[in-house]
Amino acid sequence: MAIVLLGGIVVVASGRGGELARERTDDPAPQDFESWADVARYRPPAALLGYQAGATDRALQLISRLIAERDAEIAWLRERLRQLQPEGEREHGTLIGPDRTDEP
View: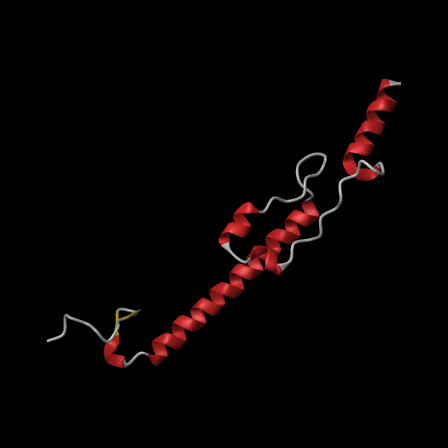
């Protein structure tokens, strides 16, 4: 009898028992990870033992895709800025502004 009762508690607690079930959260959307703080605050949905693997995997894939997109945009912007910078104002791969004081 105790095993049946314990099994029923496990079923209800895991969300398959009706009214005591937690609402399932939607998968994260790109706007959920607008900044580093959003990523730091993210907590994957809990499961009976650990986290819901599917939701956690989808969130990590989304985060990695967003970071890759931002890295590509930053690289493109840096290259575009380098192209726009006059040749004499480039030094060791960095961009030097027109107000350099070390020129004679």
